[in-house]
Image (cartoon, chains in turn red, yellow):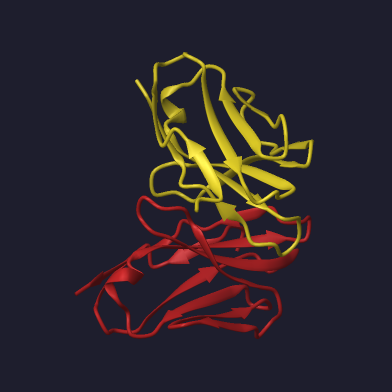
Length: 112
Length: 113
């Protein structure tokens, strides 16, 4: 994998559904993996920064896992709510220090 | 209260007419970044400042310049905008480099006519 890739590109779920999406990144020169949430007309907001293989982080109904050996991270949302509707961006940070390479994002829409 | 502020939120400029986008921060962070995001694509880093040290990405066109007169402010100058420069421009800050989360402004959407 040469670039940071996210899938799916967009996702429609019903309120109450749990969902997950994927971020794939180059495992060479890996330093950290960032997840951001970007709501329409607002600023992207940091969710998690993870660095260790097997790391798992949680914030409310949102959690993320990291596999640095195979180069992927999953973001999970339990019991989706309409306010979770946003674009979720992941970014890989290499060991040169805090330069983020972003994926194209997953646009999540939660229907009431 | 907004911590990273970008003005204006929407900017329309004419082909070839210089334009400046501004970013300010109240976080006193050392590092400031400018990203360009074209429609439905990944945000792409243009350059960043660590304090006063300017770091240009290798593939950032010469048409794009930046200034950071003090810790709080950073400007993006596009000397001769082309139609292909229409995009969302995001400013971000971080306390330092290496595993620090970045704080973003809401972006300036640039239209080139």
